[in-house]
Length: 350
Image (tube, rainbow, N blue to C red; front, side, top):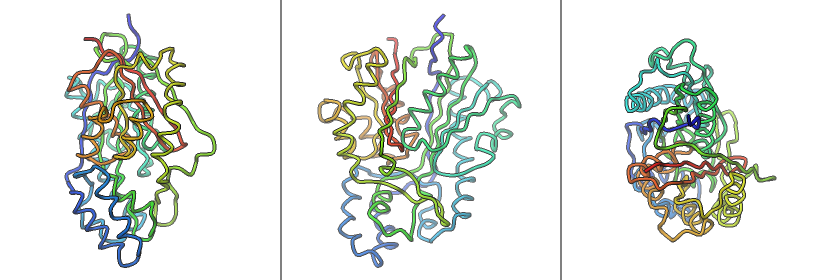
């Protein structure tokens, strides 16, 4: 019997408010331009992201007012609970399971603070059993989709036959700041959207798509590349625009090192499925991984339709890749705070 974890189902969901990129640019201009002379120079970022539209948990008018930390937290709790229930129910229905069939819930989220955590807050509404194991993970950022899938697969593998539900959910738009007149804040406003993905995994009984191996690399002295600062108004983005350059220089050797530890070679990887941080990052990934320009097509489609949703984004890409048919072996990759590269190999049977 094969005790590696298999994907039983994968579902994605976004909140109800769709924003076109020009609409967000106009909103950002109305909030920042009068107080930040550099805004107009930076406004070209909005056209260069490759994003057509994205989704937010609140109506766009909500973001035009300066919001306190309690207001952001309330919006996060209400919006995240609704989105969690929606995407989890979709994944369960696709797997032909009920919430009572779930033995372990892994929740990935870095864009809001909830204690009790989200899976506990929605437990009664979902119908989780009272003995369900809860594994909430905070702080993984954009790497959370790959790292979370790894954690969930190892939990499934440790107890063959049990059902593990992974929910990766981020409400990035709630971090929009009126007080931070910085390049990093403009970059964040040009890129980030809200969304969620859910995966059901089980080990021990077949499955066409299986988790083969996982690896990670943490670069030293890179804490300032990406993350949150925390102050009385809430989270503030730490975001260096050198990320595409870093990716182009460092990602290729890092992936080769990780794959070697998986006991594969890069020649064994038939497809890369990458977290698309933005158009420049996607192009940098193609160069770093020696791919043809345009090879990361699903990545570009997801960033165009949804923006960068942090952790769940790579699972949106995986959903599209599955729909188009996976080759025998794919490698999921994502970069996140740390600064960290996370990789996960999946095998797909024809």
